[in-house]
Length: 288
Image (cartoon, rainbow, N blue to C red; front, side):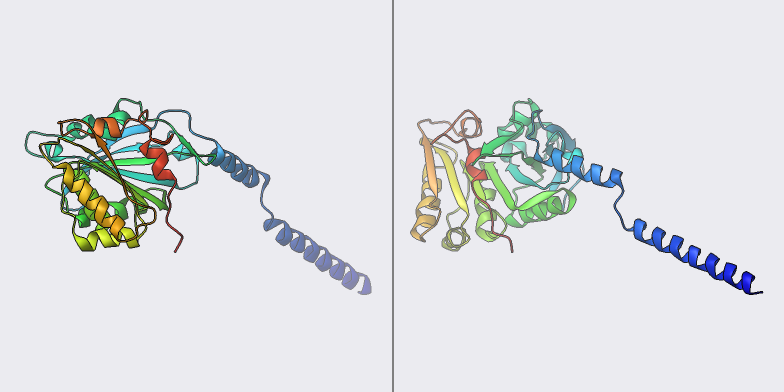
């Protein structure tokens, strides 16, 4: 009887040891998990070398957007990092009227570069490589600043966006919407590039852009017959009168055309060694 009891005690002790071993090893990361994380980390650090993946998303966003084009970094699905977001806004000629589908949006500005696969895969700023998520919506009618804000919120929710690096650029009507969005939602945008922007330089919006420390680089043709060059000049002057830091700047091209965007959005056009994309990436919002 004593022998049976001793055997039973030994068996229970052995089971306890085995159970303890299983519990300890269950919390240890598997080699495959470590390898996967290491591989993903390596992918995150690699600069993009292939053109962004460009596609149309023909799904409405809110009441005033028929859909949007998106350019995603080519290795987006192989990484886990967040990317800078650039929203490019079109003009009145690209509105979603009965005879205009989304393809017209792909014919202007930054969106045209993406469609032609001539938009750079990455930009190096301060020794670090960045690749944008670029989104170009098609509006049904003249956009309000709230329309642009709704798009920003939608994109931040849907894609891996670095919320500290949100940038907005636009031409003509879209340039005006860029001004308006920055004036009403200055806490959300790090830098803007309004080109031939059609809007009004309201004191409150200009003050908000300055106090929100939104970086501004505006473009306009001196002889623009559609939107007077004085519009951009008034915005820049009023923003800077509010002690803007960084100071807003304006580039004026000697031309009588309305189209200042083809030149401004060209990555080969640089001032002080930077194109608009490199210039934008200098700026970010502080984490909240």
